[in-house]
Image 1 (cartoon, rainbow, N blue to C red):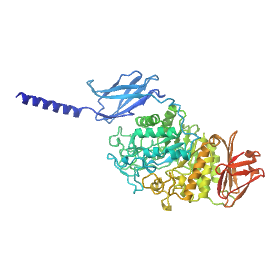
Image 2 (cartoon, one colour):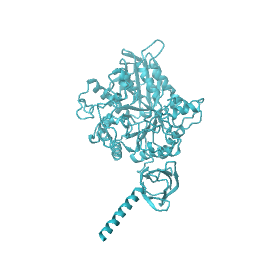
Image 3 (cartoon, rainbow, N blue to C red):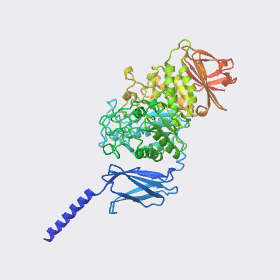
Length: 626
């Protein structure tokens, strides 16, 4: 009997324990998982997620940390904790206790305030001295084949699919840092690396499914931090691609939204698509309906449009951006689809970041050829409607389009082929800081530069000389240095082909751009040209901060100067299809009687004393004037 009684007691205890375990509260997420002592902004909001946790109350007992408010929302699986961190709060760990209505602790989360890096707040973001290299990581280098297949994720590597994952990863980025450094680039903008656990077409990275986690196909959070550190050792800054406007439909919160208005139109089966009428944001006569059709509509049905008017979501996104800057030691942010989120949110997003990091840099994407629309988003711009932005930089799409048009245009009576790019540059009076714009011949969304200029090698070199001479921060898309392009003209806008695998990034590649094996003679020449040009700009501050003067195009010749007290650069762009003698008398306002010049890329010397200079047909000639 005693044995039977003992067995029954044991069995009852096991059943009781199982019931208690089943009913006990488990908190599966606290975001951000940790923070830092010594931040400028004293408030911190924690998102807490778990099964039916709204009946819990949190308590914190740590010097310098005050729990001001526990916010309970319509979804019982969430709590939001508003903390205030004292200015002198010490780094350290402390328990957050979650208690039931009877005061019993049912879950404890150990929260950590970390020590900040030395001079973290004073970090210098990318600036006029930098040259960016843009990489689509999935198509760059497969440095770790073990992450090609991730059992917990929906899509694995399949190089046979244009829109599939191809296997590039963070280890591939680390492995190629020597190449990027030798080419002369000082900053790398990497397309998004955060988790994109979508069923298909997930390689591009713009459908975030976890804002605090690096995609497992690329590596881990620790791998990313290591990549930034290794790049920094070589003097290379890392720019993180971020998306505040939308996320991926498979984001972990989609089927368990904190509030009904977390996504726009979350109650509708078919989501209204954005009108893409970005001009409504600036239009003084725009209706609220038209503004909403632009800002609230979804890009596609697989990308939920985030409602930044919800203060909880807004704070979540702002803190997430600051978390990545501090955690990974970032040197900049590129913000996708800048005019699509709520404009007031974007004001606060940029303000909070720049409050923490006054010397940081953020570049926004406003894809339009109209400089009036681009300029209104830049910090310091006085807008008619009083809108204030704190975003220091913008992508210079107006110059990009004008340059391509000018390169391709044929000469006609009474016009100059360079007029379009000349006039666009002349509109710099619209910008508060035109020298902080990012200039580029192409990027991951446009047709390849090589295709845009109809695979004309002379135009290729001329356009790059312009990008490296003019004001701003140059950005080059990976593969431009080896004339990467799409052979089929009908596929020039096919993103899967535009973002082609970089040759040599995969075992067995017959062509290797890192070693030169298999490249054509023209590709090698282009790569060497880019290397010389990039390193020359890198080592000549006059092209970073020097004054700029350009002369109205005349007889198919366009001349631009960059100069300071010690150095003078004269770039001559000649669209004539024959060798051209240029009258230097027209440019004496800046030349001031100079008698000698040296080609920055070839070392060839020119005698300027006779008042003329002869430049090659269809060329961009960069001269160091003595």
